[in-house]
Image (cartoon, rainbow, N blue to C red; front, side):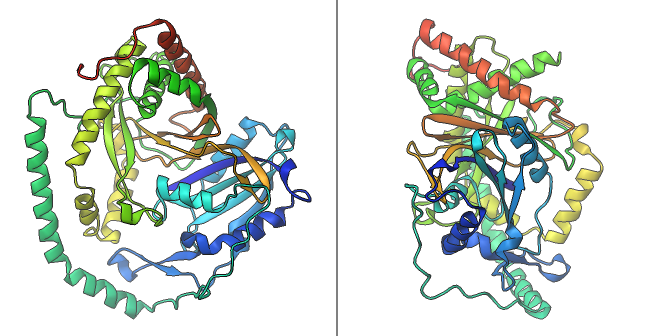
Length: 457
């Protein structure tokens, strides 16, 4: 459940030349802007309650920043293989939940970083903010003044203190559970009423997605692929055919997966369903770290042959999903997760994994697709200009593929993270994203123009 960012840099812009120690010193100087980087878990004895975050008294930057080199020729394939190997390893839970690899030996003299942070510490929005805090607007790195008051580590709580905190928290849970139950019931009634209104098409329900070869129990190993498309091409399609940039991204993924399954002679009887993470941060929570993410299910309409009709159907589906999400309380689900004892939950998930239940049941959804907007101006790290940024989101049992993209400097960079065995040719899906873009560009240039906003599928 870690989120990984793979960034590529041109070191020719570094004042006085690139040096690994400069990267490490930059991170050291920015630690005060990166709260999750010095926090580790304090596990509650016997798994009575969720762990606590504490400021790590044994924090060691050298443990988290590591140096590596790619074999020649140091292209995208070699970088993807390295990122897949890093992504396959769990984070050390007795340390702050992040790692950064500074990678040399890329073609054209480029360098790269692979930064891995647990999803418990960040979501897509806070992850982007964390990344920005490591970057500058000019080659000369900004020096952040020393923190006042200086950072202080926490005292590691004793087992008795942790158990005492857990018991006090558990004593308050019956009242909290009653409130959560009331909110959940109100939410369910509201959703039922809304979905019965004329003209409302509810988004796909959990477990309504078709079974496919990518919806199986996952193993510990990963495959990674990268690709890039022009943001102007995506916007041209949006302007000509309607919808949003995110709708076009979903349509690209739908078209790519149609081709992938056709290549494998896998004929799906029902359309694919995507799980799309969405931020539920309030204005007050902007700039705060941590995880504030919910999700919506979107019909990818992969059963529609015509790419324009498919895009229009996705456009309608995302509108319906967003409207339902407004009536959906993300806090209610968050409340319920607080009531699951980690010891019980961990054993339940291990049981599900060991029995490989997702090999025999319908998946909750087919694929995770996420789109994170980024800046349209150059950014620098330790003086090196960033030329590409590929995000990699986590995969789950039953959903062996995650497609995440981020825009930067006029391009949309796609990172595909997949289970090694379930999706052995994930690079083929990356290639098909370009094919799907070409198909929609032709339709935007010669086909029917923007759909009327009042039409429905």
